[in-house]
Length: 191
Image 1 (cartoon, rainbow, N blue to C red):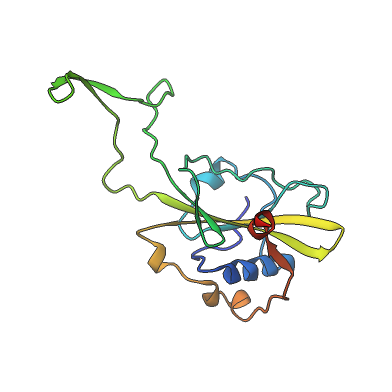
Image 2: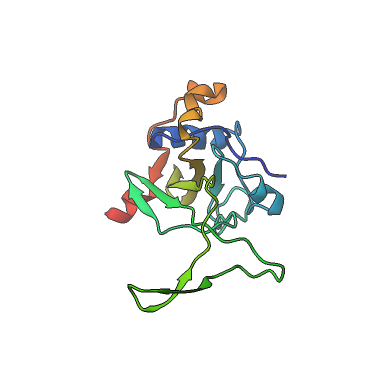
């Protein structure tokens, strides 16, 4: 079973991500080498961070991951600084035949609209949706070897303030990342 690169962590800045990437580069933290399986997706928790490499000819594993997925449904991305944020969308539970309830037709008439009202099932009151935070870089080992690394981190609004930071992880807190080793892929696109 694969384990996250970090647990119980909130990402505050790109410097935090660069420390995680550098620890992965040095072999101090694990890199995710394949998509999460069913047990790993089910175990997903607030504070989990996954470092992974794009599929390509220069990937560490020789294979890499084409797209990181965890089986959830997300909003369109929102950009904040160098990060992309996605907000989990609630999915109604499946019925006995494996289909999700789409809408429920009620037998009352909405007098404002003059039609039969359809209601979508609502999430439970205690549902705390995940927020997915992503960041991507190019690893600048040498000119001819462009490798793209990603960090995918998860948190919830209810738990984000109780999560630790990279400063709380002994292997990361004093790590000094060499300047220029990681270059944001967003900056490259903006040129």
